[in-house]
Image 1 (cartoon, rainbow, N blue to C red):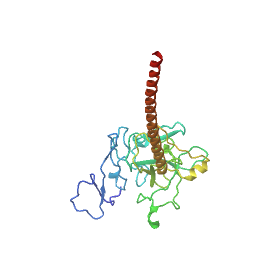
Image 2 (image 1 turned 45 degrees about the horizontal axis):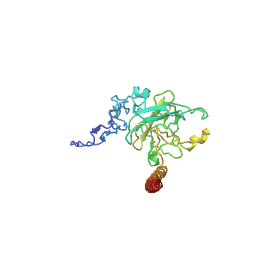
Image 3 (image 1 turned 30 degrees about the vertical axis):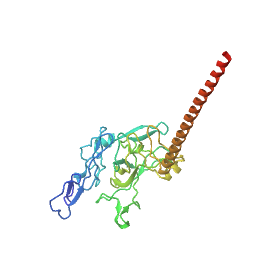
Image 4 (image 1 turned 90 degrees about the horizontal axis):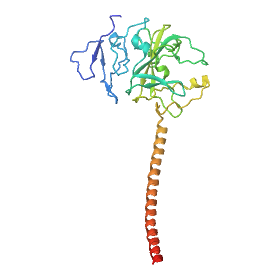
Length: 305
């Protein structure tokens, strides 16, 4: 790697103060503290990859929640590699799990509770886009700048460079990419992860990736969902459906949650009211039964006399 790249200092959780004077051109990275999930699994925060190889620690976790300790190497002359080591590039992130949906093929769920801003990668070989009438999970590829490793256009407000930058698609078929099985939320649901439009790879290269981040805490066994875009459905003539199940729920839209809470509240109120009415009815029957019984007994005594 070129020696002209700035040095990097890593602060542990932002708790330790750097008493040394910062040199000109030096970059400081603050590492956030680890997150403990409800499963008592400690998720080590994943830092974004920069041009400095010291930041290239694999993002994946094991099925038991341990962060991978391997560092990633350049594979195809790209400025910054896809943030998975070779093992997890082929096997996938252990924090995720692909399961049968039951109705819609397969879906992606959290193996254990994931924190907000957990980083994921949609990756695969670069190539041509397949016919949309065939099953495909390919995504468009907009390669980053070969020097900066970013695909931001400084001449356009530092926005993602998509103008005249399209370079085929990334096809995850046959790879360890697990994000390809993420569902698209239905009409009554919302996404809980999204693309950051941060790409890895190089123009006309063999392989590339796109960063995704969770935007909220995702409970264990819940689905990971992101919005495919309206064109995906219309191009394939497929009707958009809700994807959440009892076993593997998907996040509901706020309006749906409020309506459901209102229905549950009304149901609880109705049950309480009906319960009070039934208790009152039982008391009335009990009192009437005692009175009638006493009257009948007196009549029988008179007849016997």
